[in-house]
Image 1 (cartoon, helix red, strand yellow):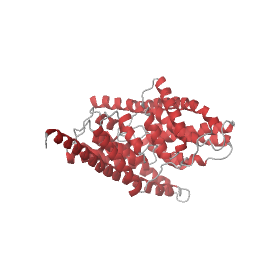
Image 2 (cartoon, helix red, strand yellow):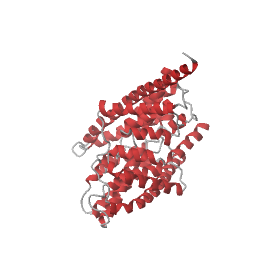
Image 3 (cartoon, one colour):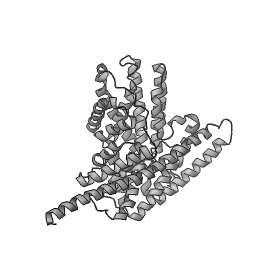
Image 4 (cartoon, one colour):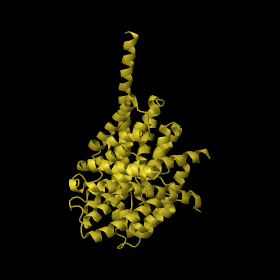
Length: 440
């Protein structure tokens, strides 16, 4: 075999090896993430059913209060022992992929079980946090552990870590296209065909595991939602501007609340998660709909019917409580993500816009539900500034393919609006804070 044929054979053999490694990464990440989803989805209804008996059993409330206080103490201790599990984990993962944060294999072995347990406790405790960001970090941790087995940690800027993160996003959201785009659009991974093969096979195998082995389907039941009529599409640019501005305001409020709490809290890290847990305790008996990431609340919005004025009042109350509780829940370095609360808030704002337009007669009865989709896409893109990922994510999660063209319009106008307001994407700010804290 001459040298040219040997190089060609080696080239294709390397591509095949990358594909095989991507498949193993995707399967392993999907197994971990689906196990996490099953654990949470099995326990959450049991807890909700038990809490609903508080009027019949007086001891339910004090016992739940004790559990939440113990959970807050446990989470504080866990974050102090493994600081890299705080927050969603997406900024940490992006820094690792870009080579600006170096994690040893021993640290990864600590991060994975700590993130799994910490996020499970915080979300089951009712905090308004998402599982999706943590699933991205858990996917990256799983991939890093696997990468050590075949000793290819050097390849293309930690592309295997990125492949694990993409597989984690795919398994969490059921969104392989968004997972693939996320790596190159948000993580800014350098595009190479080898990297594309590794990430592509990782997300494909993760999607097959999630959908056909574990049986998870659409996150939101919106597949029947229809796009507005052509005569109503003129409102979509205004929707994009509104969602862009709303995302900027929430971005600033989130970072401001987080920084204010960190600078002024009198509590040690062991107890910094106690205040949001106490608020979660009150909301569990006053307004349980706003607890958790918000999948159930966002999915229930299509069933809101009645007089527009009364529906608007209810949506305003839910949106206000969800926004305030989400801001509080992200303080204290608690392990948990902002993606699902972000999508839920976008859905609430979109539902508000749809109901308001319905109330003044600008859209038909069948059109207002599509604004839930547009609200999620616009608000997400305004916050994270990844239009292609946001459009793919919302479309894959909802199955509302008829709303795809309108989502493009709203998402890109929200993107331009947020840029015009000179507000950096939320994960850029969170990454910068991590770098500063690591230098101290």
